[in-house]
Image 1: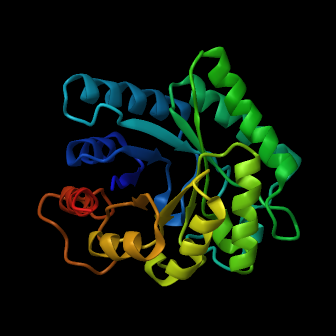
Image 2: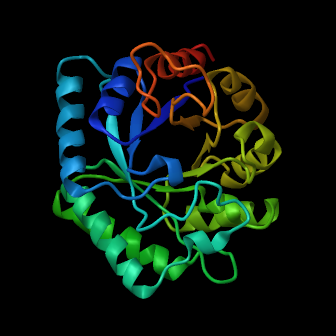
Length: 265
């Protein structure tokens, strides 16, 4: 079994930690404390260049790459039960479409999207605008692109709605959906994650994310069938600081432990 590890980072230092730990990819954003918003294109360019340097130096996996979160604004990290966090005006959709184009042109191997309508369903029309902007930029660069739907899916009202969303995303050509199964922590949403895996029917990867700790990974994978896990690899608020690691930074020990836990499966 091969379990991919994705680490959310907000700077080059975090990217380097993820690469050296053996992660498969990073999700790049800023303002992680509020759930993340799109990183400036200059940071995307720098992250892509650094990832390529690390791969060339064999300090990262050969397939290590950068995926970019596309989100114009964030209210709070605790967005469960508030699908309005992921509804956007036409102007915001246009902004995110441009952010997606810019990120792909800057070298991102994937974009992480999510948009809901006023009835708390996947807003297919708006999602297509974002998806097509990213795909057109990739086509101009003559390369492929990975499409991920983010944790907006966790604000949907129930398991049936999340499974229906998975079916929509398969039909719209997405490769992955990031979810905690609607819970604050993915381990508590395991039943929903398993249902989403079944709904995907092997046509889309379900990536378990949301409060994931290295110690959770084996149980998550065995109980849900997910093939990907996502974490920020940062120490939780109130935890003892790690020597040499700034508060809120990507922790090498946590990142390495997550990769080791996934590799043991």
